[in-house]
Length: 203
Image (cartoon, rainbow, N blue to C red; front, side):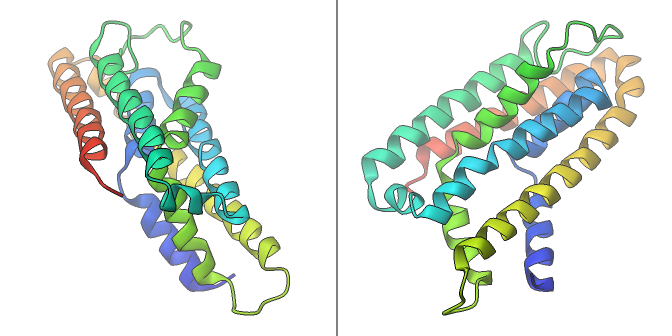
């Protein structure tokens, strides 16, 4: 494993995306514990893309317009659903002192689906992982599995950090309902924008 791989992975993971937004939303809305579940779900959602890249299935998305479009529009629908979920009462970003109604399994599942239904994640791994595997290396598949596992671990750790920062701001947000309303609109608008951007993307 190279230093270049670690640095590149950290930069990629730190960039705000749907997983980061989701983890932040859960941290703000439900606290640190649920944000860990969100981070775990987002990390698990990377697994299908990593496996597809390792065994070459991601190339199907690259060559098949139909397969890419199907996955893409499922992802678009889910991003719009997440935007609606944030805005509705009792939704993802609903903040209250009562955390009992939070479902860990549902939080994990939503995080997984955000990444599973992102066709560009598979294409990213298809282009990203092979760059760090030496040419003509024996055990290339094992090397790619190791690199994918390290990427997922880094994702989990970084996302926990995002969730912790959001949870620290929770009390401030609870005491200021107007701030929460603006945050809801901002998060919902961002998810909606990402859904629209994905819908308009070619590849």
